[in-house]
Length: 258
Length: 258
Ligand code: HEM
Ligand code: FES
Image 1 (spheres, each protein chain N blue to C red):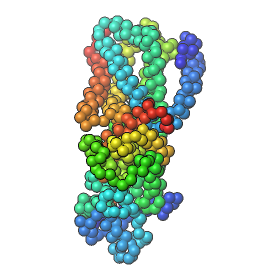
Image 2: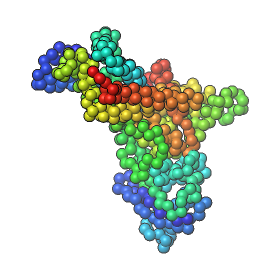
Image 3: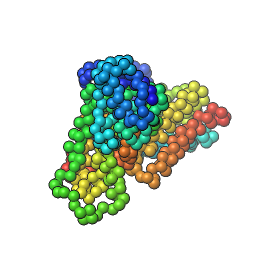
């Protein structure tokens, strides 16, 4: 999808970056629009199945990501972490996985937006009194937690992924564009960044809590005996992921000595 | 008992509606919600002195008044069928309200339910969905001897639970997305569980879901407001049943509809 684009992007002067980013958007757009169209025409139930499939993939991916990030906690000058990150950016199997990941994000986000727009349209005139029915609290805010995750994701891409691709200048202090350890340490030593990061993670946790239980219903699995247990699993998953990611900046703020 | 009623008044689908406030007193705590409205209307017709705002009687739907036809349906104080659980508007009693309370009464709000007048909406869309396949297409004659088609008890129970749906549309009214999934789920499930309904189950779920989408209902976001507000307390497990039948139908049936 973007290999063509990496070739031209070794240049890091500003105009070229802008040009490249525009090209990137146009390149993906050619795929995004037909994809959105297909998703739009699909039956509402099939669409949710695709959303849930993509979402499940993301749920699994987050655990992998968390696992790798936890290497940051080793006080080894980033040896293990950079090794893991290096593996993730060079291994061919992971590269295939990466394409799936981007596709999953794209599909998930597109369907999320389509769903929400349709849902708003299906009640053109709202009620004067609302919110009296106790519903799953988080389900109502999925689009907002989702969009918050999306902004975080864009910043995350600018901070790490685009650097790796050579689109963005390697920050001073990092050895090269693959020195993610140094980049992460710099980010996590910045109090403002850390606070914003905490907020993002909380929002992510809210998304995940509803998401985890929701996929089972979407796939048609709702069982008197197992569903309450799955709800507890959802809570555990959301807490583990949120706290797991939170531990890392906390460590760099308060306990890390280089 | 005394009440202040804020009722949505609108002459027809095109005109602009507004809330009109009526004060009403001398209401028995044992009267039903609809009987209370009947008294309001009688006083409006008589141009009674106790009525501060004279005008034409309030239009609202009703038929059996015993909770079985699904005709009545008012959005009362932010909840379909009002504050009591598991009852229709006609079965709601005024003793469930505090003396002197203000009660806001609105019609069902959904794009698929165009307003006809005041509190009356057009729920033809639900019938259109039934016409798409909510039946058994062979002539089965009159009722057979009960034991000639054995049905396991647990399936009979599930089918009966789903068949309790009276098609009032409270699920659509309650849903933050104006989705009819609980209605369609119940209508798909109550037949799919039984031997008579099974042969057509796949085709039925596909065509009913397609028509549901075409009618302009929203998408399910697993908020479960429908289950909470359903006067027949129909469970969202029937939505799960529909989801998995639909998935199976799309993956395995020879004829593709959706
Ligand atoms: C790592 C990030 C994410 C993960 C792991 C994730 C996971 C999930 C999962 C599993 C679901 C449940 C699907 C279902 O109901 O069956 C879901 C729902 C949803 N997601 Fe995400 N998601 C992520 C990011 C996003 C983003 C960036 C958006 C941006 C628009 C988004 C928007 C939504 C929306 C709107 C829903 C609710 C769908 C509905 O109403 O049923 N998500 N998410
Ligand atoms: S009037 Fe028949 S259910 Fe209320």
